[in-house]
Length: 83
Image (cartoon, rainbow, N blue to C red):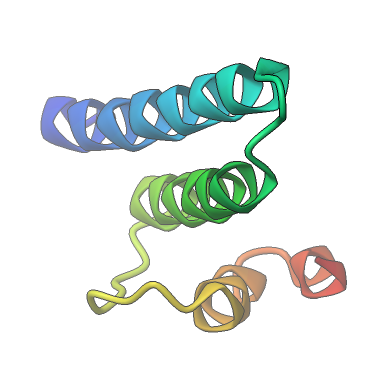
């Protein structure tokens, strides 16, 4: 296994988890900050997909487009098109 690839994937997953932690804090507020929470949900999904693509050696351009990332990911696993 390539150490650099493992490091990059780990970074993507750590960043995605931090976004999910932010969501938890934002939802616990009074009032909950829904718009910011939704933003961080999108960010977490984006980073998780980028980690997935990196793991599977699938190149991707710099993008924030979840549809594009899902489409690229579906080349590895077609069931991801259901997202």
